[in-house]
Image 1 (tube, rainbow, N blue to C red):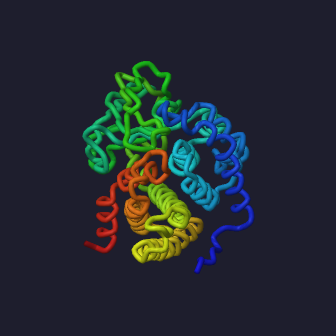
Image 2: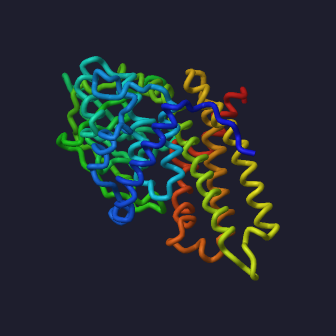
Image 3: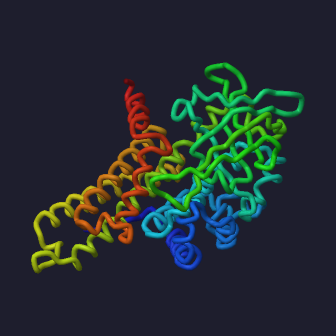
Length: 383
């Protein structure tokens, strides 16, 4: 029984078809080269903007599409995650789902006029820099400092695991502006052409090979105080305000990835034979896929409800954390079980299931680990 879905309307479905067309025409022909290169071409961002799938939530007066409905983000994530060649598009969803809200919600009018048109056109690529070598989920451990000096901040420190780090022009950087445990963090937009800003190597990862992930270094980088997002010392509040959408977006992508793996495995076991009959005819195969299909439908009901709530501005941090940890762990578990059904061929990179195995593993780590998600939920229970 397929679930009757009501979260999407005609315009969302049409947008999903647009994304699918973009993947087939603008991504698939370059996917192998991007994987080998370790990053996508810079032109991907301008092409995506021209197609209307980047910066669509930016208000029309700044060159965007004015579509603030999160369901457009969700259906784009679904389309990308189901497609087997689109891991390089994570940089686009990173901008749409995670970074752009900082530029639309926390900026002054002057900042909007300065940055949003370039973001809407894809000419300015963004990244967000939180993680440091000694500080991941523990934001209180952040040491990158920004000291006020006249009309500037002087920034020193380093960041690691920064997606879009090689391509980024603007980096939303979490910096320490005081030792205050509650109001010591601020958000500062640092342009990559500033003296003292250095990109480290493009990190060699297990999966997501077309997505650049970088080290960043700041050595006495002078950044205008006019680049501060929100108020000084309110960085933690700004981060917390946007984390539910980030985690829901990752959950939507993980569930769609799981659905894609299930669909491809079903096709494989119907075609592949062993002992003179299709692999799918064996009871173990039927039971395994029956369990996966049931789990997917249960998760789909919860994620669709979370999308409804977030669209209505009603999703809380604990609900988003639950969505994120459950769907990402389910994704990893499903890929492992489906790879087993492929036998030895599942270990061969020429089969998509092997690439799924590599790409899925990070989902339980980025955006907050499974353990951190459970901690958030536990605190929400009053524990």
